[in-house]
Image (cartoon, rainbow, N blue to C red; front, side, top):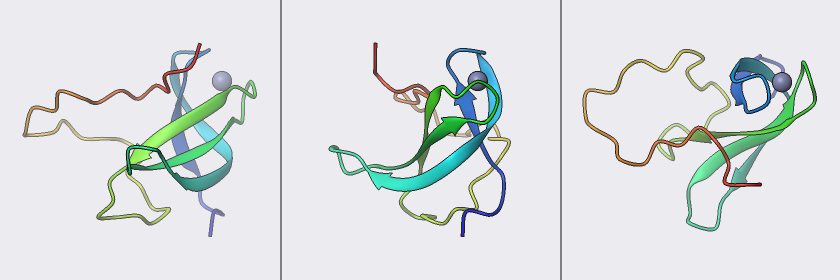
Length: 79
Ligand SMILES: [Zn+2]
């Protein structure tokens, strides 16, 4: 199921990198996310996904959303 490449934002390299060992998790606020590690440097990364398409096939290149999203942190709130 996770055989396809999932892109995530690497906090360390500040760029999109393929996510390794990605697994779908549900956060405390009920949002769905994929958590894994950067295949390049091993940094833990989190990619938020919409509950509508809770499939591993998330958009690799997020298109500019037509609606303004106030909360779109591609970064986990971790130290
Ligand atoms: Zn990285």
